[in-house]
Structure formats: structure tokens, C-alpha cells
Length: 288
Image (tube, rainbow, N blue to C red; front, top):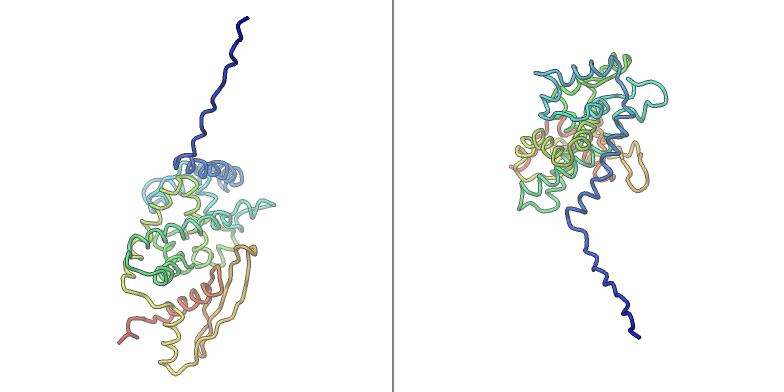
């Protein structure tokens, strides 16, 4: 009697995922996020055609000014929508605030990458100081003004009357939201290209080694016979794992200045930088 030999299957060893597979997997959540934005934005006041004409209507449009054209126009509308322009329970979800959160982190990554390549001899301390200067709210507001972002923001009547289009806090937040929208619409390469276009010249003008703003402000105060600047925390927000601090710096005979950051130290540096900029302090004059 012949014995039938049982077939044996040999399992093929499982290959580890390639770098491309990992990148694709990490990018997968982007599409649902963009879809969520489209749903939350809905139709802005005046209808989608009016919005399209405002931001995409040829010469002088916001998309022309930033050098990027959106595939999903709802993302752009979402990034430009202040909470005062929306009604009902969708106020928060339909405003730019979530995109601002995303854009803030994308901006930090892109600027870090730019600095790492532009200043190969800079140590970690110098790179950190440059980063803090380039991503602080005051800088974002300045960048927003260069592209006339205020004219494109959707505001409620009360906010318009209060001068919301020129408020630095709103300009800075919408600037970050715009970066977040470009990231969702075109991916990291599109966001990196946008930040490069808007921030490159400013980054290059800071070519000389920088001292940290707190040191510069203290030396400036001492040269004028003033006591050292004092710092106080005025606000704290966000979850415990990712807090946001708001700090004010004070000097006798000068109006206080404020700055924000993810740590008290970063917020103090930002506050000092804000006072330095407002008072026209020139750090290089202190070297001689």
C-alpha cells in the first residue's frame, strides 16, 4: 500500500515595512481630517461662489499672494473664519482654532528644518533662540501683514468694528491656521514651500549670532539705570501634556509686554523679545 506524503507549506518570511509604507501609513489620517474640515466649514456667508471670488479671483487674491492654490477651497475658508463670523453650536468647530493648533506645530517643524540646514555651525542654544524668534506670535502677525491676510479674514460685525483685521493676535492665529490648511490640502511639501517663501528672507536677515532676548533686555535696562525686568505668568491653557503659557514682562516707566510659549522660559523669552522689538532695542549696539 502506497503512503501519500502530506504536503508541507513553507511560510514566506514577513518582510518589514519599507520607509515608503511607513510614510504612507502616517499620512493616512490626513484625508479624513480634510474631509472633517470640509463638513465643518459648510457654506460661508454669501455662498461658496462669493468665497471663491474673494480668495481665488485672479490677480490680487490671497492664493496669488501666498503662491499656493487650494484643491479643497473649504480648507481655505475654514482657516480664515473667526469665531465671531459663525453662528450656533458649530462656532468653535467651524472657526480657525483647530487649524491654528495644527499650523503652529507644522511651522515649528519647518522652521527647525530650515535653521538646521541654513546654520550648520550653530549650536543647539543658538538654533533654539532663532526658532523662538521666528515662530513667536509677533513674527507670525508680521508675516500676515506682508500678505495682507487681514483683508481676507471672515469676521463678525462687532469684531470688524473693533479693528479685528489689524489685531496682532488674530493675524498671528490665522497665519498659523493658513499653514495648517495648506498642510492638509497639499501635504508637508506644500506647507514647507509656503513657509519657505514667507519666512526665508526674515531668517536670513538674522545672520549674526543672537543673544537670548532676556539677556539683551536686562543689559539694556541696566544701561539705563533700571532694575532687572520682572516676569509674571498671566495665563496658562491647554492639556497637562502640552501646556501653553502667557507671561508679561515689566520694567518701571515702560508698558508691559506679553509673550507665549510651551514653557514658562519660552514665554518669558517671547515677552522679552516683544518689548525689545517695541522699544527698538538694537542688540548689536550693546557689543561695543
